[in-house]
Image 1 (spheres, rainbow, N blue to C red):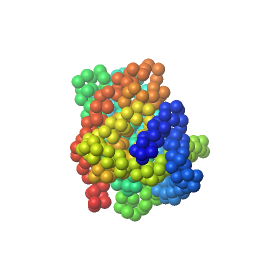
Image 2 (image 1 turned 90 degrees about the horizontal axis):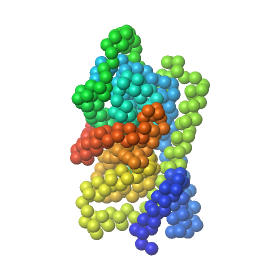
Image 3 (image 1 turned 90 degrees about the vertical axis):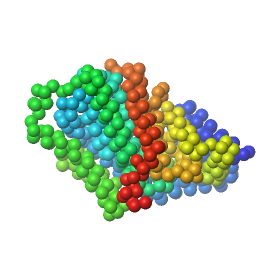
Image 4 (image 1 turned 180 degrees about the vertical axis):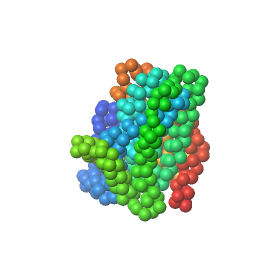
Length: 442
């Protein structure tokens, strides 16, 4: 049987299993091991799974995952995020649409604390959304604000998704994080510009906070809340500056970040044994999920390496079909949009990484830059109807007055803004590569 047909059969089998509701790591790992048995016999199948497990256990940078996840849960469970929103509420309330703009700022800071979009969605839906609705903000606009802002969690460092990409693509995670900074801030700025312009055109969408309510907050309280907003930035700097300067390794920096977050929660008297236990349990659950998925991805990738499928597919696209490398890259991005209607970002990465990442390298594209493109495309796919992952998360967390039609309508302009950001990063790769080149001198 031709190797191309074997690769196609593996993908189709895996997709069928996913559609039937099987767990992502189970579907990917099952297809990989069964294919190894059929191709190379009993010993090949056993060796494949065992080698992938040993490789995973020896991946020292994997220790960063529980550290970053724990840091994010400490910051969210200790209610430090509540102070952040109060800060934006006080300082931006005098601007039309100011609370929605502040919510985007909140999401950026939450992303810098957590690295997961689900955490941003949970905090935005439980803290920001009720306040925005109570202040008579347009429910469709603010629903889109929460979804768009939460998607920044997988782009702004310390993005857990970029850590996974770095392991699978064998690229330096520090450079990937830095590559995500400017595109992440660019996207947040585009969101803010859109909200401000739209609210200026229709003041009813984002009413200004009444002056008497703004004046009721004393200056001392405003300054205290401003300090609360600076806290996540301080934690981020304490973690990242030594790493970027070369004083600490990535794992050591992640431990510093987790310890700094825990210390901040203790000093603010927000840490109890119940909160600490909750953070540990959630960290363990998410970390184990990621490890199983990486293990399955490594096994799947090993089969593809053995088949030589990447070279065969590259030859199909470039030689037989005569496609331009940029056309191939755009087709890859479109495939992410399709998969994103029913898979999350991690599942998409481990499914296509064995094929796409080597192919991107063979086509001559920068893998650091491609990691940012992948992440932005995942953000768009998360919010694309009919089955965008974020749409259903929002429906589960939103109050009863916000229906599924409202959620679908809310994301249309924000998807357009994200598409503009993606086009800019594709057209001007230095948007992503400038900062890592500056810091690392490449």
